[in-house]
Length: 375
Image (cartoon, rainbow, N blue to C red; front, top):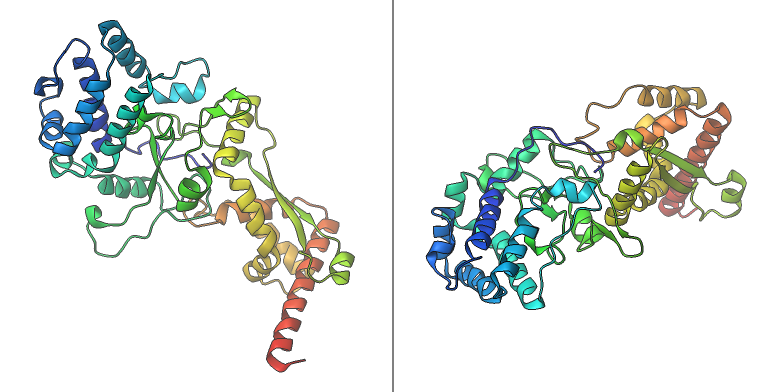
């Protein structure tokens, strides 16, 4: 998690109810031989029982449960004992529920996916929870901001003026523990965080937070209260400049060869969690690509320097104090870190950056003139 969430960020009440119902159902099923209404709770359970599609999903799980009571007890215990999700992220020795055989795994996955995608929208469920997922999203945004706190590069969603919370558009909710591998947590209230479309659907997808394909179990940041783990204070941006002579020889080269993200001062544990963040969301690659491509144009437009001395003064001013909107405006954090790096460099490095910016600006002007006047 790049930025820390507000400690008052609330959990989604709909998923608190649905997750509690799942745990209640598994507990009640330990000693029961028949699928009946008494397997469900009084309020939330009645809504699940009355909805035919949801009822059928619960029944499929019941039919797939192992026959021996001891095996049912072990299944319930394995899930109940893992309700403290942060422990799974912080302690690699905490066992992860092993739902077997395949038929049971698939039926649990089908049920919890249905609870997440369909049951949550039932009018009765929202009434009991006193909140819809859309209303929870609006509460999340008010506590934090509309910026994706995983990457700091993109907004979550756009609100429309004078529209009720329950009718607003909302961002994707990323399952920290993906539905495909951890179906027992598909509707757990600690397993969701709103993310931008790129982080959720393009970068992460169904990647496994807790397991590296090569190295096995790993630690990862747990972003929600009470931990709100983040590492923005550890991040540094380091641009790698091309040689001006190379640019003059080949005008197709970029003034920046790379823009690298580093984490000086990070502990061993923090580096392990940062690596998980990198693997899952690929943010450094995304940031490096963008800054490399628009470095000269952005700095020139943002600083509008009159000469080299003014350029240095602008860099110093922009790195002096953290912008007030650093956790609200897209890309603000990453450019601030770049300004900090530039300001800390010797005058020779600053002059190198200045000359590259001027070269690119002149080249753009020459190209525009050629297109306009055919020169």
